[in-house]
Image (cartoon, rainbow, N blue to C red; front, side, top):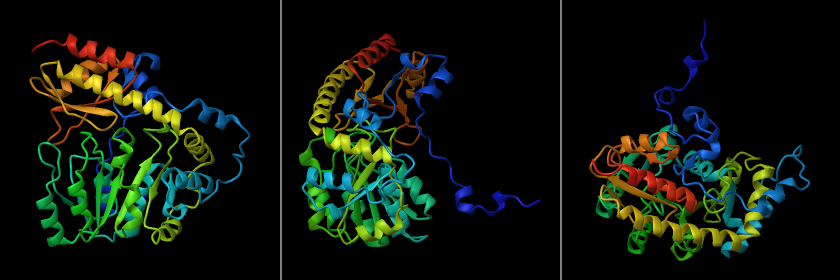
Length: 366
């Protein structure tokens, strides 16, 4: 009997699955706890959720039986005004993840090179494998800074086409130094800066304004963190304007739903409210950092994002994660070299942070 599996491309059959974070309802069933009792600090989601204006926009008259605008014109117009750039530089997407995949499909033939600097966002390596790219890995230093000498040497030797960098980096929240960014932009490759968390670092850290003056710089953004729309899936990229027509041809025609476009518009019409929430998250992040520093067996890292990475020093990190999980408190553990003794904690509401700290302090000394 013929099996469809026999026709699947071998490299895809061999790929390990990406490990996503589970939603409330699945976690609730697994733990036997009501969703309302869970403290979800494992996926860097916005604890406030969408603005009331977003929810109102979704209850107004909407033609769900009609396909959405394939060019997301209203969203692009508002984004152009927000960033003070040309609308022709912007492509809107179903989350920034869609653009990561799209860029690899547009640029990479099987066997082409992509530069990656782990530990970082796992989708870069995942999509590289899906595209049959050759992944050239330059590990970060112990302080999560870039090994620029190794990067420049590797680029000279293997000539990769693309380089993806999260700024701030996930999972540690560090920023690329201005001097390193300048050096990266001089390399003969396309640099993709993933600014998913840039709102929590300060607008002056963004490279969006530099795209117009470069032919090899791309900046990705998302509404998941700042806008509280992780469940809606809407993001965008800022590109050299000559590249945008190619991306518009290559993307799926109706890639951003009517609901996602409406939600993004409402966010962009209420940026001041989102910025107030951002400021509260930043303030809570700094207070959480101080509190974590007082726990003798944790070593938290300063962060420019909406999470804090902590090294667990005298006990197994997975054990700490599981003890928290049994209490309905979810944090992220990375089962990979360099991070297996670390936990990442998202910035939640104050009551959630208080519950987390009480649980950690209750674990005491070994």
